[in-house]
Amino acid sequence: MIKERIQALLKALNDQDEGIKKAASSALERLEARGSISAFADALKNPKADVRIRAVYALGETRDERAFLAILSALDDPDEYVRGAALKAIGEMKDPRSIETVTARLKDDNLSVRELAAKALGDMKAREAVEPLVAMIAGADRNIKKVVIKALSSIGDKRAEAALLSLLNNPQEDPYIRKEAALGLGELGF
Image 1 (cartoon, helix red, strand yellow):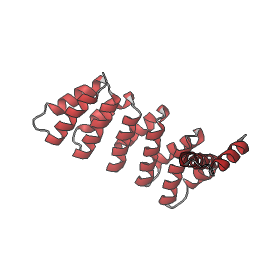
Image 2 (cartoon, helix red, strand yellow):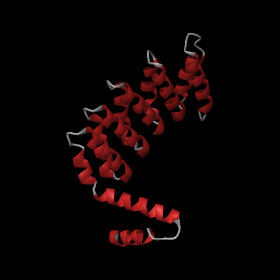
Image 3 (cartoon, rainbow, N blue to C red):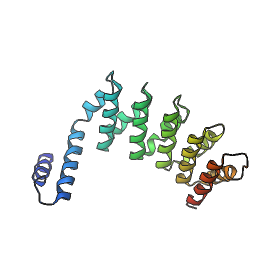
Image 4 (spheres, rainbow, N blue to C red):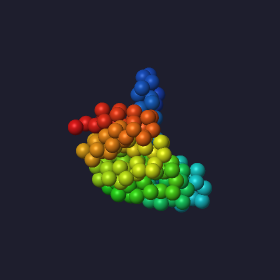
């Protein structure tokens, strides 16, 4: 069956329609990546971080179960850029099995990783993460607060409403954050 798909897609690369050519090319890339999942998973053990990052993104493109598990393991990589790439891929995959592991990254040593974890949880609409996200606000810098506000707004839980109201109603809060909280309140879907 896969051979028939590949042959049809190869033929479609010569189609007159540019959209069909692009779609066939994209489909071939995905099939190639799926066939290489074990190779990409092995690349996550490479000593070079840039190789591991490319492997994470390639695995993310496959949307395959085996790829998901490999990407999940990359959240424990010693390199913050690899962890960040894994969080981006997981956020796009939106697999609820990753919520607990991603939530743990809210306490990562690296600020960018914490931001990406918050964004991924918002993308996944992870209600389980509302309380850890709200807890992140206290003492956080402006960038973290902004990302957390967006995540909470995306999740749309009642507990998010209370946190956003608190930010908006706090005259001591940065006006930019108060504005973001106001916008976030408008995004809540209940």
